[in-house]
Image (cartoon, rainbow, N blue to C red; front, side):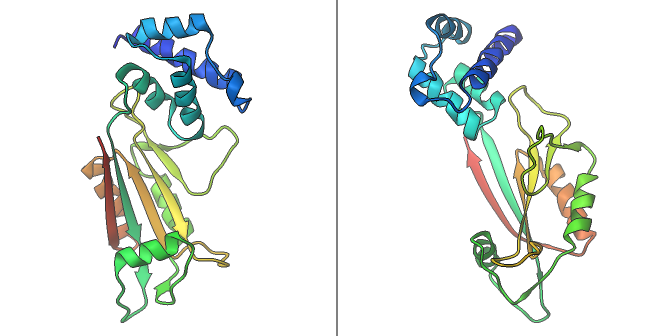
Length: 212
């Protein structure tokens, strides 16, 4: 895959995303000359419907880089997702870590947990070397997303994202911290563990998902 071809395909996808936006599904199709150009650049035989499906996935879920990768390779790049879950227990409490994670992730609350210093932890993670806070162009979702400064490939999306849980009707979402790591190395994951260790908060649960 030549860099020139990559950039040209990237420009096509960006243009389609801009033109189609949230418009009618039936009108969101590439022009015939655009489709021919796409297939010439990628060496594949995409249909207009294929392109529409991929671009709508990009708009709602996948990154621009992943979408361009798919157009060249016919599949998304391999991804490793690791969830790191942290919380504090009251003295003497014993709970299954996976059960705690699942209950809080679904909006429930458990009396055996105590609040975490969420603001201090967030600031410490924001200061982690080798990362920068993601720019949302005016839209700011919950949690903190930090992108790795050195991405190994043009389509890479190495980052971590924090999600806090506190249970229903709890104004303070500070009982459980889930750090979602995407393609982080073990050294980068260890750096996150070191930050949490500085607050004397151990890793309670680790969940991995490999998409190859």
